[in-house]
Image 1 (cartoon, rainbow, N blue to C red):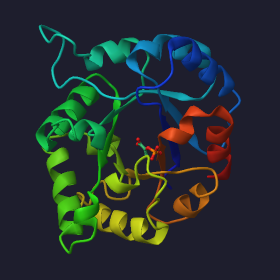
Image 2 (cartoon, helix red, strand yellow):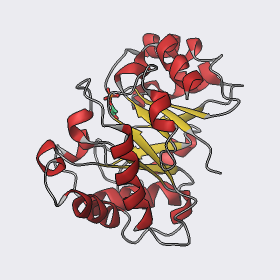
Image 3 (tube, rainbow, N blue to C red):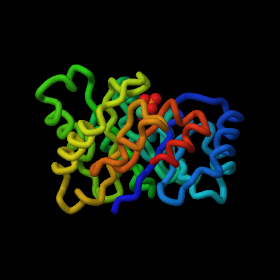
Image 4 (cartoon, rainbow, N blue to C red):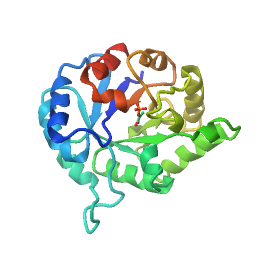
Length: 241
Ligand code: PEP
């Protein structure tokens, strides 16, 4: 059985005080039957970690450098995140891919994360144009294959299917369709890890629609953007899941 993961991606939102208050308000989130993770901006991680100390909530980062420590101005190394007790790191989010991040870079970032003892959440997903085409499943399988290239410890990976057209738009994917496409992506993974890898759905998830997604056989949780910024709503998502 794969345990559900409910992950909140705060993106570039909140100031440090607001982030700390949000984390405080999440201290009583129900983690009995699901894993819960928050990924604040880098600048908030230390304070959020302190605010969540003693809870079962996992700590995430939203990105990581493809390089190890050294002369890489403006970057954050996986070792630095590990030093802050970060557990997970999101890589390959469509908002990063949209700024020019390619699959090979995503794979390198995931490998650096694993080297530092972090668990990568690798995002993949198609544009609205590809969604409507017959190439859709091939596109997604290739994107995942290339984003996993060269990675050892594949069983430590989490994937997140995030159709770009569903992110922040209020348009959710159809749960049965997301389940089917995730099932096809899962079936293309190395048979040794197929049953182990968690694959999340992300795109306009809220407390009123989460149950429909996590009830599906192939959907092992959700990656939540906008709705993770409201503590009561995020706690309701974890409860309804
Ligand atoms: C996301 O950014 O990963 C996301 C799924 O955003 P939202 O929930 O706001 O659609």
